[in-house]
Image (cartoon, rainbow, N blue to C red; front, side, top):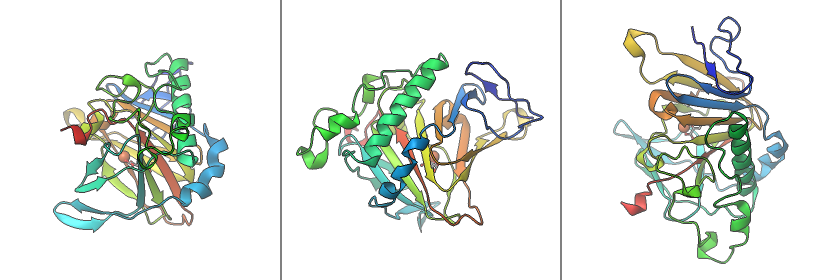
Length: 279
Ligand SMILES: O=C(O)CCC(=O)C(=O)O
Ligand SMILES: [Fe+2]
């Protein structure tokens, strides 16, 4: 039975008999051996009003290569970053970033950075950083007229001046957004363990629109044991932090859900610490 170690104060262990495979309380959890998951329900609920602006972004359904076959992704995506050099390539697809600008995505970015810093500090965890360090929405707003809307002074990755592990907190330098038009749209099991994000990436997601279930499972079970699994129900304004060994030891997915008619948008904030352009 899963018994997740909760890191935040008060140090409450989830009772397996009550919530064996779900996390419903706010806090940081160590799922296994430094695989950190933070869950902050409704933390950015006040930004749910931005859903119409998010839906109006230039979404694209893109083609990827899965096991040698070209297929359309079962969702739409949109990608933002600090600089045009922060491309992101996965499954044969290279994403070229849009600049943050000063709209909904920039607003959410700033709120996410503040939230992660304050929750990390409250839990006594590293990653408290300086919530307004590095590239902020106001930096970008003040830099219109530079390279197609990109700011001059923060290109090249390594946001916040942190080390290559990327778990150090501070500003995010990129964001992959997903649009799931209804319950037939999904993302399959995967890990966001690409080299560009460093060895211990921190990825923070924010959800808006329809409520959907986010699933996690151990990438490999230890010693012949069954893989552990976990489900987190994500509602508008919910924030999920993935840190430490989580991308190495666990996979995640957002499965199809019959009966969900409305769209869901997720923003997944990341730090590119080893830009593809620099290789
Ligand atoms: O939509 C979500 O919450 C998950 C998206 C995800 O896993 C990803 O963008 O890598
Ligand atoms: Fe992911």
